Length: 532
Ligand code: BG6
Image 1 (cartoon, rainbow, N blue to C red):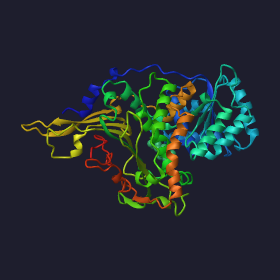
Image 2: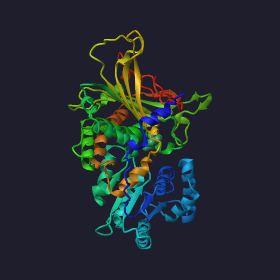
Image 3: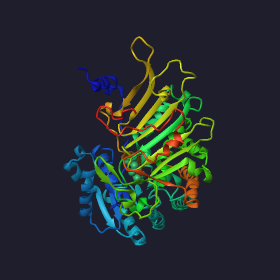
Image 4: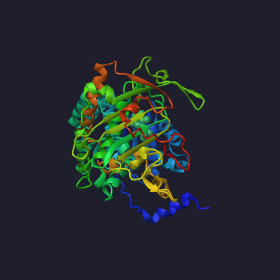
């Protein structure tokens, strides 16, 4: 019997994709502030180790961990080794490679407020330049809670660590999201960081832009002649983005309860996806042009008026439920969450982009925790044919073509279109044209953090957020925060963990033919996204 995967493999063979020689950054030292925290353990160190194993890091490379916790070099290395084992794919860990890699890891503990510790780091960095030939190139990574960032920036500035060491060396800083807590604090943070660093030293990270499939949105749109002519209000009925997570807040109650999904996911990740889906083609593919074009999208987002928030922005919070026979706790039972918390763990919203390409086309985005599955996808719903020549017994919604860009998991692209069912009658049915990245068996998708750290070391800021874009996104989000504050009666809907969120979110999108497209919850190896 012919195996479906064999056919796929034949269609896309290794020769069809070019592998280019990767660029290796110049020697450098990376200083991680918040080195004993969750982000370093789960994301940064596994990403660095993967880069090391793939020989993408410079030969002369050093990581310095910096945080308040009392640890020495050896115990920090041990801690990192355990994390890398836990958070890297199991067959990606080699003891021998780790032994080599850990020789480049060092740790210093000190308070972030203590200027002397920065002076100490400066002396150490100078020593590393000599001992390890790191050439004066420095990358500071802020893996700390948002309220700690300003004091670190200030102390880096006061101790002179913000300056480049030599004319031909570089000093860069990566700032983790959330970038600010609201518009005012984001403006303040931009002011503070730009006081000590120039904009081309500042890399505001949003790990969604490091995902291969997100970058592929640009390639799909701008490297193919067939999509761009129909990627506009003349042919598109609406655009939908879903980013669902099956996990809850995973012990991050302290942070999350003061943040909520609007700040945690929408202001950054989802709006960045909107930027890529909606931008105009840049005239050249460089950092400035790409970032200019996504900025124009953010500036064209039609502000949701305070009085329209209740109707257009649905917020929800997961409540306890039974998932696969087991009790799943509600958000208010999570550690670090206040008893009567009204923090949202789910958002569904509708908005418009006021420009010539998108005028009148609704954008629907939705994201939440404890939904039935982990999946992120961008769906372009095209308009139906002017009239229905063929009758369809099934779903009227099938008269609309869809292009689905699966961001994760099972990264790929799916096009749904109508076909004649073989037989004597003109029966019509929708079929799939489906590409899965996994079919390129020789291609290993790089981790989003790895890609972005590498880009920063190479001085490529294309996939990082510029100050003006952060501010434009907050300008769009701020009226929603204001409305919630001014009108606390705006409902926070409870939804059972394991469901697709509050029912009323359906009313946002429900038209005569439409509803949300739910990625399937029962993933099987054969068809990870069964079509509902
Ligand atoms: C982070 C959020 O930025 O993104 C988390 O703080 C969220 O709450 C995570 O879980 C989702 O990222 P991914 O890559 O798993 O979709």
